[in-house]
Image (tube, rainbow, N blue to C red; front, top):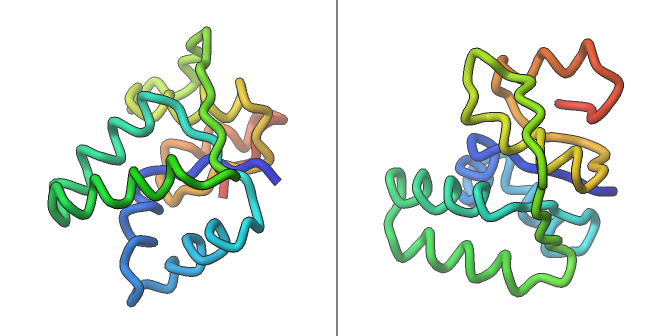
Length: 122
């Protein structure tokens, strides 16, 4: 299963107190492959630093890049499917380029994907 994680999900999943921490546990257990791009990594770093610290962000990104089930994707096109929040398009572009099974998010901007066939957003 190929998955793209929106930053809002990653931010909450980092905390072991969160119900979303299971996502990081499943990533550790190699239960799914995570698709990332350079743009996604930069956003993860920026937002994690804002909410936690530079050390937490760096540690988390180092952890991601060491996992064998994290696949770096370099999208060569921009689909621009989310006009209301163009910054979210990086997740769709990565998912499309990597043939993702799911995009995991709770961002309502991704609801536009419900009108398309691929990828599934939850």
